[in-house]
Amino acid sequence: MYKMLTFLLLLGLFLNSQAQDEKEYKKKVLEQTEIDLLYSYYKQDGDHSAVTGGKGTEEITNHAPIIIVSTPLSDDEVLTVEGGVDYYTSASSSMINPFDGKSSNGKFEYSGASEKDARAHLDVTYEKSNDSRTKTWGLMAGLSNEYDYTSFNLGASLNKSFNDNNTEFGAKVRAYIDNWKILYPSEFRGNDSFVKLDKSNRNSYSLSLSLAQILSRNLQVVFMTDLVYQTGLLSTPYQRVYFSDKPITTQQNFELAHDIERLPDTRFKLPIGMRLSYYVNDIFTVRTFYRFYTDDWGLSAHTASIEIPIKLNRNFMFYPTYRYHTQTGIDYFAAKGEHLSTEKYYTSDYDLSDISSHQVGFGFRYEPVYSIMKFGSKLKMKSIDFRYNNYKRSDDLKADIVSLAIKFTL
Image (cartoon, rainbow, N blue to C red; front, top):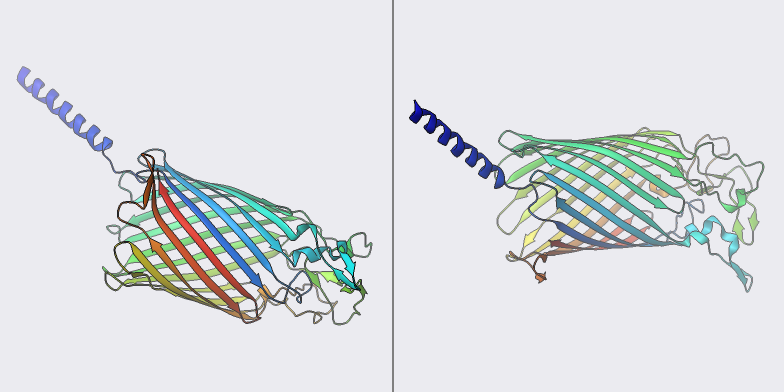
């Protein structure tokens, strides 16, 4: 009896030790802190500015540095903090108040306080996985602010894999609580006959669903959809509208608008998409994407893209990309001077018109097996990613986008 108790005690100690060892050496969701430094430069130009009623310069430049820090809180938990600032200049925004410039040789030089500005944003995400790594849930919150707009968001996510990890289901809910600082075009300020907006809030609620399936060793498909509902002030207060049944008056060579953009205070959006990735061999992979979009404002769109990563050697990857987009305009769009004053809703924003676009680009990725370089004993530069895209739209809007991403581990 004594020997049996001794044996059971030793067996219990051994099993407990094994369990502790397994717990101690359980693979972490994230092995070490990762730091991503991102930067993008965007420049566009066109001649359909919504600020001046659908005609006028759309010149914009934007510099957007971002830092993302993901750190393991435990074997199962990861905290991610993302922050950044968009620095932009906008020639069209300066036309919100065109009468603060200077006259020279009979011509008026327009400028405005909002010509240069910045948007700051911060997002925090907490995620936790179960021991088998088949389920991950997360919570997120964020805040962004610029001179006329403040946005706060909350969300939650769940990802569940099954079928020997060949199938994964994902769901995410998110709410954005936004508020405008109402800024009217200068000709409507102090105008008693002008009908002011009766709300300044905009709330957006979304449910995102995805289903990923490994079809073979070389082929994976992902289906995704978003259900988005918006309510509140969905128009932009400083975008002008000109009517065809009213005369246009000018002040200092500038055409005074008849009204501002006015749109319904609710909107339902439904995009449905699919990604298909095919591993050809050790050199080539083909990644394709298609999305259909529709909403209750009458806009429908098709978007398709393809990216072909080409592995040049162990460390370098080159990937050409192409994206095509086409859409029908919303029911409330018309070009400058084509709306009637009897209409309830109207806009001359060409982003909401019948348009198509092409985007062509390429990228390089350098990621050696170990690291690019070390800084001290812990900080390592792991990869560098560079991308360039050229964008052209059927209404002659053109843009260039350059981005750079550098990943560190700590």
